[in-house]
Image (cartoon, rainbow over all chains, first blue to last red; front, side, top):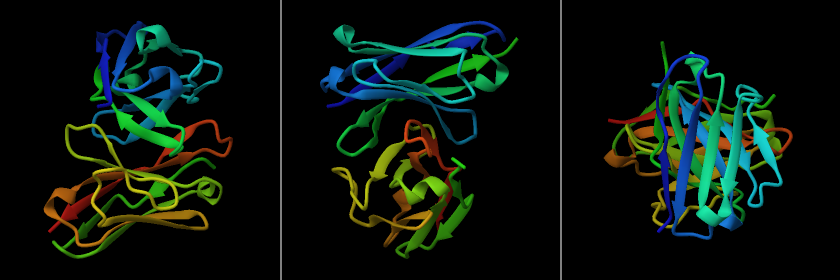
Length: 119
Length: 108
């Protein structure tokens, strides 16, 4: 069974930093591209970033480019999101999501971790 | 443009058919995927590609596409289908994802 478990969320002040983690199990993590997707309270889904299986290709949404860094450790079956210079508008539930190369789309999601940016 | 536009809300009588649409320029080049999200839960993939359903998704869910518009149809809507639905596709570069604005489906 595919499992994605996010951690690292919490309350942080504007301008602060936070590192999210996603522990993957139930599939060969090193064979899949991974994504972070966020959802502000009461709002829709927003794609944040993606990383290819070998970390060769990394992409960011314009809203986080230069502030967030995605990375992965295939030996630890883990995905990360380093978030710096956090703003109030970054407040959201952050989901870790797997991309199926055959389907060409995001197919599994974690349960999410809440990040609140507030003074 | 990399935006995907959906109607904010639709309602359907129990057992009837409802179609949810998603419009965007990138849909001329890329298929849409559709996700169902219930309150407090993570999204679940219901349709991807031309018209493919992941294992466990009922066959009352189907997808179609024409020009810049993708559609998700629920034929014989059930009470448990009440949820928010989001379309998703690639942007014009093909490197990034973009999500639709979301449609709240109410089953009456």
